[in-house]
Length: 135
Image (cartoon, rainbow, N blue to C red; front, side, top):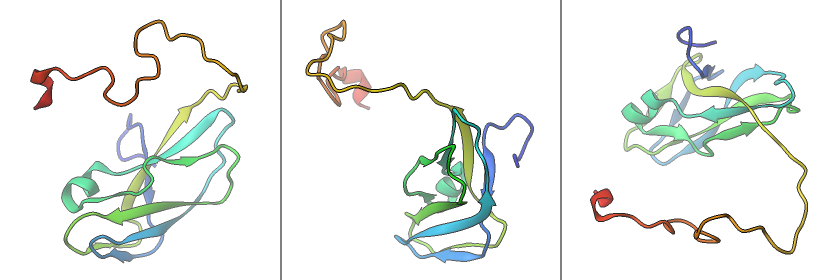
């Protein structure tokens, strides 16, 4: 279910009431099982309201649900805040976003083609940061 027409994410609700102490993480059952179509993946994402108000988030965000998975959807939640977080059965605790994906065949090679620019194998921060962007 979605909260409003046009929302991208589907609400994931907890099956049972639970509490998370500050710093605690838990696997929270939703009671939901689904069959996602081939070529589509489910991404389990935090709810911005829970993150903003209570500092509760999805530990492995985004959690991935493959289209061939048929078990119960559970959410790995963590309380990053300083107060106890308590949820009642049926509370919205995360959201599910369904997205198409491409999974081409992969092959092992000894050499990669050039990237077409000077980045090459430069990783995080390799493109630099201008002084005005450091704020």
